[in-house]
Length: 287
Length: 287
Image 1 (cartoon, rainbow over the protein chains, first blue to last red):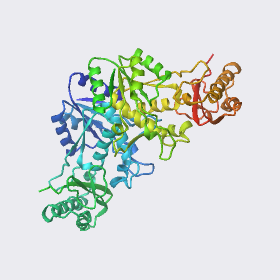
Image 2 (cartoon, chains in turn cyan, red):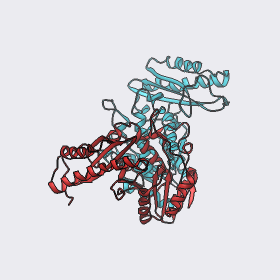
Image 3 (spheres, each protein chain N blue to C red):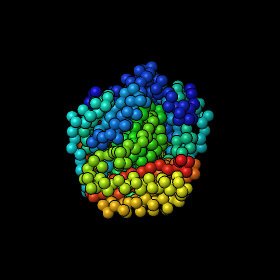
Image 4 (cartoon, chains in turn yellow, red):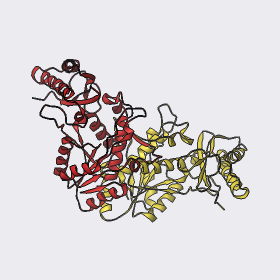
């Protein structure tokens, strides 16, 4: 496996592979690799010849004054992890490499970036679209793999790629859960045992809504989101931020489950100091 | 010459050329082709194997309520003009092809887009960066040619390409002037004879500043811009909007001419109903 830290070096890979008719896949990550990433890597290995994992903690996700912890960068550990998974290239640029001092250009996806998780984090998705746009330009992958776990992020990235006619196919991969149903994520890893037990209500709430749709034919958004909230309320450690049923393309709030298309049931909640999200896709055709 | 109106068709060209080791150049235009474009085409033919001219009148340059005239699209005439110049491909997509109904993604270049011509046209440069970003993604040119005539636009495009690591080289070509010194542009073409005579003071003003720098060693921005304004004031038909000395990278206002680098002396003025711009590059090393 090759470790690349500089942009010009990374740019050299794609043209060479394309000349040989080979397909390149990019998996952008923010560090702290876990089993969710492993499933993206496996999928990438099936659809592409060469797999690039990028690790970059994006400081422009955050506003000045926001509290956030810059994860300690342990390149040696991350490199070993991805090398063990058979990844071909690890792209791990520094912040200065990506954002020179007079960096001024941003990519935004209006409306989508204010909904759900964007309501309380005004710069977050601008940070996502800007860094993912730049990474795609540098790596020039045939496929860009992202997780359904971050549903809003996936939808926004797919929209950006379509709107700007970027030459990559966004592949959205299923959420990976532990045997208890909890999403595998770096944030969940920072929960203490009591919080982790409490956090299980997130998926239980979503499953309750799915039951209502599938077994009782419920279609009203208010009934579904209220049912989720009731499950969340059984856990005093959990403080819900939002529970929403929205359409999958524009994240518009729905009053009833769409008939011909899939709908996204998404939530965010604070468990102790940690903010968690989860979601499922619902459709009236689900059996 | 091939005329292409659809994005998927246009996308097919670059990979084929790149496999053959050929270089592609893009000249983005807003229609109304003139001798300024002809000089960009000649330059493109020298540095690249295949030249694509795009013609697209960009509606998102403008805000709702802005007065602007959508130029009558005469594809047959434009096609004949560029074919006569030896252009290989004319890319002329419709507005619906570029901006589907639910288009939401925009590219901005903060700070730069509020200066000079951006001060009174808040969405203008967001429109420029968004459409040029999309055109570059579609055409995937080795070279993107723009004119020094639109200095701020050229500087912003070059910055966007650098910031987002887009895989193209921005080539800024010299301003083309008529024998009387007036910039060749579609806007100048709409002046009546009296206005056209009046408009000559724009370049005369800039030349006066250049004289002061070269012959009298003037360095102060205020002295230079005041000298330009005095020349502009000799023409009652001309109403200056701004005259500014700024640095070439960040468009920051300068108090004195930079010593080691080039500075941009730029102006905008209204002549009758027409808003005109002009600029020259000054350096203390000019002889």
